[in-house]
Image 1 (cartoon, rainbow, N blue to C red):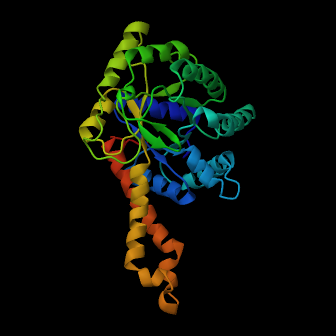
Image 2 (spheres, helix red, strand yellow; image 1 turned 135 degrees about the vertical axis):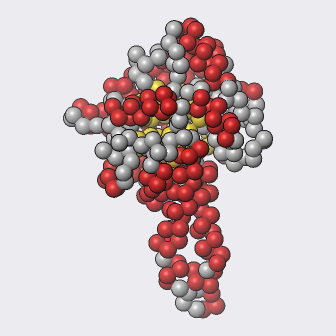
Image 3 (cartoon, rainbow, N blue to C red; image 1 turned 90 degrees about the vertical axis):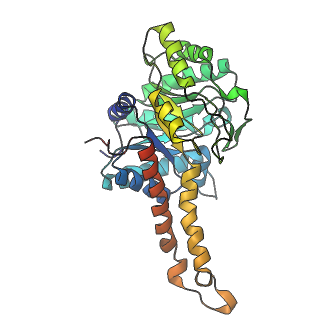
Length: 340
């Protein structure tokens, strides 16, 4: 059962929260980056999450049509086949989807899974993300209620981002300022609108200074201890201890201490994209520089087929990215915790 059923995905998240670890959620944009992620999880003996952003899905759909749904469905179907060769369990997830892309991405994918469930099958994806951080909180949660009901009916978990993550990802941009910190009031309003599980399970991407993209430690002020305040504030109001399953966005450059604090306060999923992109590309650049006269037909020569064969440098790229996934599993304490 390499692709998690709804029941197994819930078990994965429950185990992570109870065990104070989190699953790396690895963005993929091709069959090769998918294999790299699966390989990394397998080598770390960790279960994990594979995710596709709107930009990733558009790329997967091909440059002729750039259809996000086609790209996402195609890779998900491919994953259901090839993941069977890996001795770990993964969930399939779609990453950041803003309001203007819901009708072209998440809603059609929810419909695909609803059709599958109606036929007695499992959903194609195990979770989807609604990124309403560019909307008012009231509008964000109103759309979240609608999507949560549809997701629950299709046996899917919804991820919601209620306040901004700084930086830019797939066209969604937020300034780095004091708005990057979710308040207890924000969290209470979320619980009032979406419930605490009785209306369907959801993951919460709360903000504690997170920024997408590349930055050095110290350039961004992360306050993962804020997550404890959100848990306690909602627990006091609704009488449910540790009510939220948190997601850590914009984690590139985070210190191990910051990650550990986030795990202690309910983070069960941490997104990785920037670091794995670099880990994939760096070996390719190394190969091209070292084999310049082989990959190019310099001065009328014929080059070297073995050096420009995509399989040659592609294997190096896969190994590089897989290694970074292993590091992530170790940092998030999921290494060695795979379901038996």
